[in-house]
Length: 174
Length: 242
Image (cartoon, rainbow over all chains, first blue to last red; front, side):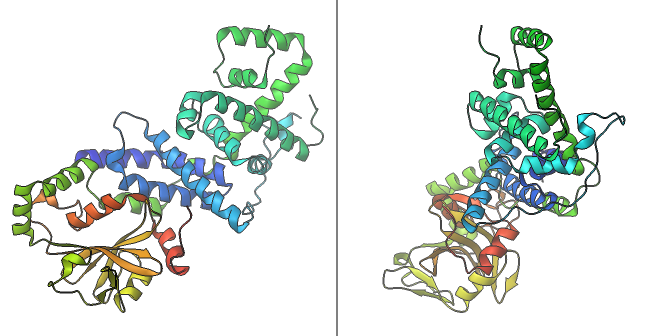
């Protein structure tokens, strides 16, 4: 294999933890997320020559995963599949034991809340809030205008807050 | 003054607001505990997302991914693929290629007349070449990378027209078969050994340029990975989703 091929693979390998996280946040399941990662890696290797050197490999991979996931969602909708239940691993998130909002919310509940979002909103939230993409990068990854990124993000966060409030009835409403 | 919309507040939380917007938000929060609470709730929801999906960020990379990255290339990078194709389309290299490759490309039934028909292939009334048993059965059932009888499938894909296609090799020939109305129609059959000239050999030394050209011509909507292929085999290659 030539040097470019070796470097390409090394860069892909370095991205795998983040790609897995992205897959997890889209699908709600590490295993289902890993299936997306596997498909994306295979596609990336097949389309290696189409990757523009100098452009963002992470964005390219997120895009491949996102498209594959939306395709899956469409066929799953046809088959009326139910979202795979997540493992029960509730962990409280109170950093210092104070009675703050977070102590009442488990990470599992955050994941559940994420899964209640519309797929389009979930994608934007995953890219910006979890993967740390800028609005511009998220817009490019998803092929939508920045204004749409902003409106989807606002809707997504609002729904996320509401979903968390639903499982956290003691939290003070604003 | 414009209303402080959720979009602007979120942009501020994400570090995407302008300085002016940031100052407005900070001033508004100081003036309104209610707004402060709204921002705090948005911020909290945001802050917990990273930890909620941190599970895959540590630990070793799963073997399934390492294995994919170790695979040899299936195709040469696009540049050399194009070079190989354009070389084939130029008269002189075609002669050279034909001589060195003993390249016998057969496109469609018309050109097939007089040449030796591979076993398991029969022309139909429209002059198309149709795979028959045992080849048809093998094409429908063999996973990529597995040999059955004399047939070995290298790759399964969905072309731009939404048809399943399989790139295969059989004794002394390689080709591309695509499913059309329940029949595996041979799109291209190329006889001859691998090329000695590196320019014509795909990275893994396997794919015949004529077959690659056929794949290029049909266009690739999607290359099936092993799981997608297994599903397609299991459900009898029902029409892929559009």
